[in-house]
Structure formats: structure tokens, C-alpha cells
Amino acid sequence: MPQVEEEWKTVKKTDRKRVMRRRGRGNGHHSAMGHSSVTSPLIEDYLQLEQVIERCMTDVQQTRIYQDVLLRLKEENLRLQHLVCYGIGSFSASSTTHYSASMWQIAFALSLVMDSTTVKNKEITLSYFDPCMSTIEERFLCERHINVLTTNERGKHFFQQDGPVLFFMPHCPKLLYENVAWSHWLRLRQIAIIGNSLINHAEALLSGGGGGDDRQPCPCLKHLVPFIEEVKLEASKLDVQEAAGNFNGAFNDTYLTTFARNDAWPDRPEASDCSDGDGELI
Picture 1 (tube, rainbow, N blue to C red):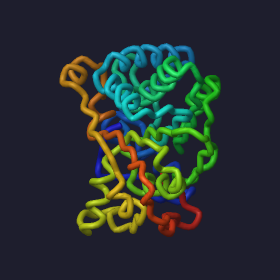
Picture 2 (cartoon, rainbow, N blue to C red; picture 1 turned 60 degrees about the vertical axis):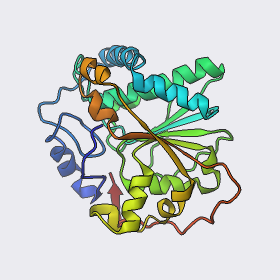
Picture 3 (tube, rainbow, N blue to C red; picture 1 turned 180 degrees about the vertical axis):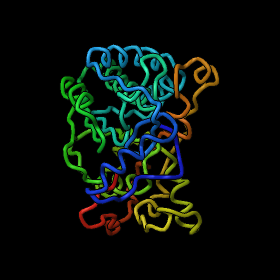
């Protein structure tokens, strides 16, 4: 999904319909991040949605950025056991030929699971959460035995798998990365993240610059700076030119982040309190 200045916001449940309507404006991408357009098409037929995602998966598997991720995961010797998707947005809000950023992202994640299963000869499980998931999207995920989380834990859900876990969360809010780090603090050395640069986030926090959620404490990101190892994932110009739809918006400013595997690990800071009464971080 496109990276924008506006990140997940806290709103009350009574404001939900108003927020959903507001998502009808923007860049053609229905998302939990608040990006959408009134002119954006919507795939409402289930079989058609399956066919479009399968075509998009075929296309994304041919891109340089996808092949780069597979190679780097292999080089890191990450024998993935679980993949977690946060904040992809409404992937059914897409043309059948001009794919939205969310469509490219769900195709990317599903392809990773499929290819990892083929390489390791062992099924990789997948969990998914987006607060604006539609009925047809939930059906698509559940029929593929994907674990659809039903409660918005704001990234604090703890995944108990013994082996490495990959979080796929491009362009999510800084506070969501903070909560993922906090909830998995003692096993971050078995965690990888495909998302934005945690170093850039942490440096902005440490410098006191920026606005919005830069004012949030996010102590985990600050403490993790010496341990973060990240590589920027670049889409080739050819991929951007030939990919149908908002491919660049799906993967611009995206990094693969891992954490140093050494014994010098700091104590976990206190959790950031990002809740707001009965509101929702969406």
C-alpha cells in the first residue's frame, strides 16, 4: 500500500461509519491505513476474486523484489514457520486487471507461503488481521485455512511458534511496529519484518523531530537501534513499468528487517500505552 503521512488513527466505534466513508477519498486503495477512492472498483464475485489473486500471484512471483526477498530469507537461514500479515487493507477493492496496492501485497504474502512450503517441504502457517476486512475477503482467507484474528490487539498478539516468524506489514504505523517488538521482545532474534525502516523511525524518535506519532515514546524502537539489521528492498524500474496497477505504491520504501543474534540483549522497556478508552487503533 502507498506510504502516506497519515497513519493508523484512534477513533471511537461510533465514528466507524464516518471513517469508512472518508476512506472513499484518496488514491484508489481501500485500506486499514485510511487510503481509498470513490472511483476504486470493487470485486464482489468470489470466484472472480480467486482468479484475480491467482493472476496477481503469478505476476508478483516474476518481479525482482519478490525474488530478492526469497534470496535474502535463504541467506539469513530463516526457516520460517509462520507468516503474519498486518494492515494490508481491502484487497478486494481492486480492478480485475489494474491491481491495487493491497492486491499486490496479499499476492506477495500468499506467494511467500507457497514458495516457502515448496522449498522447506513443510507447510507454513499464516495469520492475518486488518480491521476493515470485508466478508468476501474473510471467506477467501478462511477457505485457505489462514488464521484470521478476530480481535484488534494493536500488534500485541504473541505468536508462540518455536521457529522464525515473518511479519509482513508494509507502511504500517510506527506504533504497530513498536507493539510487535514489545510483544516478541525475548525472541526478536527469531523475528523478521517486511515493512518500513525501523532505524528511520527510531532515529526520528531519538532526535525529537517530526510530528504525529513521533511524539509517542516507543521505547522498544529506541532501545533496538544497535540491534537492527535491515536491507532496503528495491523494485526494478521494469517491474514498476510493467506491473499492472499500483505496484510501486505497494512496495516503495520497504525493508527486510532482522535483529542481531548475540547475547547482549537489553531488558524489555515498559509497554507504550496507545489505547484511547473504547477507541480502536485503525
